Length: 332
Ligand code: NDP
Image 1 (cartoon, helix red, strand yellow):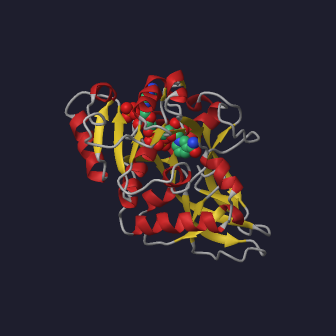
Image 2 (cartoon, protein in one colour):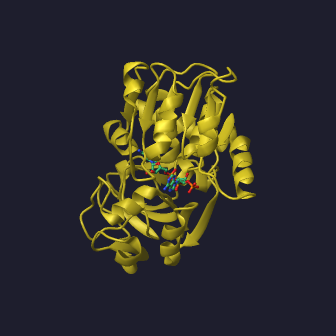
Image 3 (tube, protein in one colour):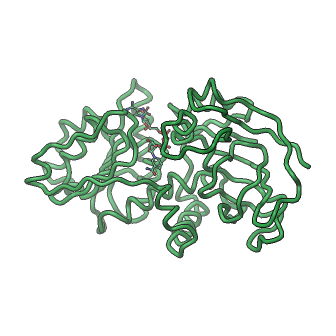
């Protein structure tokens, strides 16, 4: 047996109240298709918090260990596992329970990865980078220099959109919430350095001439992870026939669409959930192609992890609280 520590929640609720650290032991010889993984790093995403709160569509049986993503090293494999051997580095895809020092996982929910890629970028690959990749490919057939507009642009997902769009040859107009100087200027500079074409605050978007004076063509794709007024403002900028994809609702406000957007501009409102895509495309050629493309870009340092804090498992409550303002990782 091997000793491990993990976060457990016995009921849904406030993560700072219902989640706690427990000691546990695991068999060192996993069954059949199972794999024993020593965890190295696990991101803390908004969906993890929502899962503990019980407000996410994924409701694991209780008690449960949170964490949909992470990176680790294989310690032992079951007799039926053919694709992995001890020593391999793996990321989780479609698993739950990564907030542990070691865990037993289904081999089908692990993907072998290269050891010479930055762990911070790679550990979160199945959520934000994949979401950005799919949203840029699956809704509008974009041509070189087409414009994509997005709110929540400084989110982890937004930063992936900026970097991938630049690589694919698309322009991005990036909307962020205002903040006091020098933070605002620093954030704008950071997003520009990642490849953003323009960065505007919500207020600047309302008065911008960017799309009026022909500096930029009107966006054909809008990406919304905020909702409320911010989503409506994104909609107003779209070109005729444009599509807005909603994939998050950080403001917790509903999406409100002007009637005229439908009648006179034939705007389409769509939604995207990466979890569903992974379920429907698990172990397909299309999924392999996406992972290969994204890991190659990470290897070349063209797709980098967002700014983050890393804290040990004991401090998970702090990571959970901080993840509202900057990406959190648990390091083991
Ligand atoms: P991060 O934790 O990296 O970033 C959070 C973002 O939300 C920041 O830009 C922050 O802006 C913004 N924000 C926080 N509170 C508010 C608010 N009240 N009003 C407006 N903006 C706010 O998040 P992720 O990139 O990991 O995720 C971003 C969103 O995308 C989440 O809603 C997440 O659930 C969703 N998502 C959805 C996926 C899907 O498959 N549908 C996959 C991946 C992510 P600020 O810096 O100004 O606070």
